[in-house]
Amino acid sequence: MQNLSMLDRLLAAAQRALQTVGGRSIASRPYPPLAAEAPPAALSESERRHAAALIRVDHVGEVCAQALYEAQALGAREPGVQAALERASLEEVDHLAWTRKRLEDLGDRTSWLNPFWYAGAFSIGFLASRLGDRVSLGFVVETERQVEQHLLGHLERLPAQDHASRAIVAQMKEDEQLHGLAARELGGSELPAPVRLAMRMAARVMTATAYYV
Image (cartoon, rainbow, N blue to C red):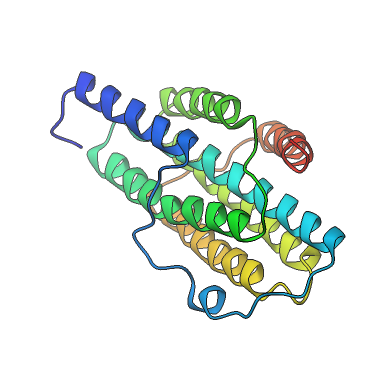
């Protein structure tokens, strides 16, 4: 990607946006083994709907992650930062594909608002990139910190017998932690407290909406 013209990169970004929103993303890693090997969970209808709603929220989070990383890579100044963001984006594709498959297994759907989520997150990511690489990386650090906490909460709320969903969320949590550490090591700066609070509030709106829509 570093040797492509800006027009080529914009076209590639548009293609990935269509793949993300259209549900055509393909994982590069296999389904987490504990999820693939888990027997079908004996869930009541209410438990199934609850588990599916939580996974739908996680899928929306991955739609947003794709948009954020894509936009931040597009606006990065340093080639090393751009490359790191692109690598993280590719790893997040796995999460996108895994959560979509799990929703299908649970007999449920992705969010109807995915185009809206993608567009909003892309705008935020590009704005962060315009503030410089250190701020942009700091945004990744804080985003991944909040996502890790969010996934931990989902592990506590998922039905205990839904081993497949729990295995997927646990692997995602581990990957997100690594992405945050990588961004910090690249020089991500600590964001001001009001910005961190605004990010948490925006995330709450997204999760509350995606649970149902």
